[in-house]
Length: 172
Image (cartoon, rainbow, N blue to C red; front, side, top):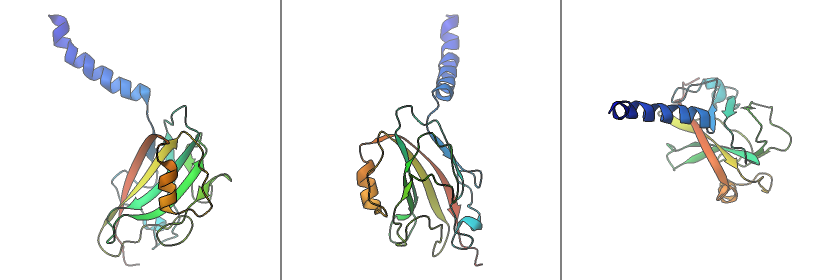
């Protein structure tokens, strides 16, 4: 009978500690909190450089990481700000201007290669920084489109994680 009384507590403990021990892919940023506001320096009103991203819990079988930054609140539908692939799976930090040589960047929806930061035409938009652990390195042409990127990662994702930041123009 005593066992039945502690079973719910035991199950809750196993669930919580199992998650912590098993880990899992995570991404965060020291520059903004999940759901918080992205500082203007990372946007079209500032230096337009990507915020630092910190990665942990990459699955053992990962051969590479891929990153996409997108705005689902754009007037014309989801807008891609950055695609990056062939990030070494041992990477724990992605910083502006410090991408390893093997890393490749695609063409964003501004029509440029690399990162173009938040620049909403009006209102507050959400920006998702989504990292995926892949079971392969991607063989994409330089400056690949978002469609090519999506097709290449399809069926190769071992785990994904995201951090979301918000931004509204300040009028600078």
